[in-house]
Amino acid sequence: MRVLVVVTAALATLGLAAFGIFAAQNAPEANSTILAVQHVFASSTATAPAPTAPEPTVTSQIAQPVAQTVAQAPVAAPAAPIPAPAPLPVLAASPAPPPAVTAAQPTRVAQSAPSASMASAGQAGSNAAAIPACDKPGALGISRVVEIDTTGGPALGLEHFKQYDFLREHEVVLTFDDGPWPVNTPAVIKALTDQCAKGTFFEIGEHAMWHPEISKMVAAAGMTIGSHTWSHKDLAKQPYAGDIEQAKNEIEMGVSAVHAAVDAPIAPFFRFPDLQQPPALLSYLGERNIATFSTDIDSFDFKLHRPDQVIQSVMSKLKKAGKGMVLMHDFQRQTAEAMPELLGQLKANGFVIVHMVPHAPVEPLAKYDEMVRQQDKLSVNNTRPENSVIHTISGN
Image: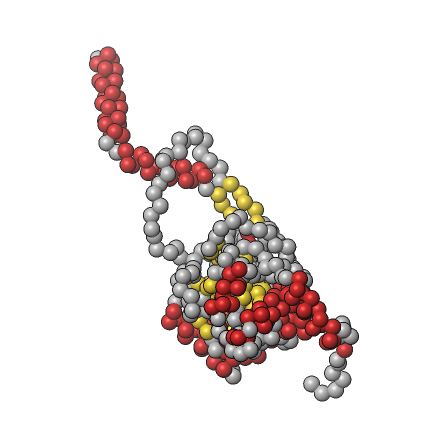
């Protein structure tokens, strides 16, 4: 009897094994998928922000940069190595939803050579490697960092240039023109910093030379800084339309002045005054590897008079478009006053912030550096900051 039981068990075991071999031979796709998933899991990594000091509160004093670091912690592979399958085909897919506010690698737009490091000014380098940690629970924060390779002078902004539509649904890039300016620019910086958000500032060269301490504050807060000509002249009108050298002076003196004011590398990002972009100057900027920025959504805040009108203008256009690069002016008081509520409404309506950084800095030209120095010699005695020269002694 015992022998019969043993023989029966052995036959059952052999039958199960045979069934397993048959199933495996007839399911190669399932085996391949399992191997692929296991291989991807084994080679994946997880990113987590390292502890870091809170960002400083931005005041009228020059803010100090806060170093941000990110630790990369590899995920342990399975104990038994699994042979890597053949590469899986890349399938076209709809854009993924915006990621959570956490450390992330930058997305590169129009990429070419490997990224060059930038020393400071919140332009690239360490700030481009990951999203800075945010110590403010519930803040808007940054969803994504994109790196712009400006080789050949790409032009961005769907109002005029359609090729680089890099934003996903509900993503917003905040850009500001015409600063730096007392009171208004610091207020914009504070509103952004309070929400752990970032923006791109296109500064006028003359304004930067008048208020270099504010330009340094913008850089220290981790914003990206580009240029907006020397004195905000419309380069599509005379005399600049008929004299390309005068037009180049406006562009290049702006670059040199903002670079000098920040005293650190700035982005090769440029926006034409009034968004007037003569073809000859677009070609020149291409030779200089400087990107031209139009916009997707123009707030027209310079035509508005109250903060609520600025908020209504931006939010109504964003809701209609679903996403966009927004043009505002940190020069305008109503915009500065609108920023805290505007950022709150962006968050409440499900919009997230994308921050642009450059692939490499712009290189100012010595000829125009000297022209800016000559301009500054006209006020050679004005070396002290305004608040040490002028004091209110009565009244408000």
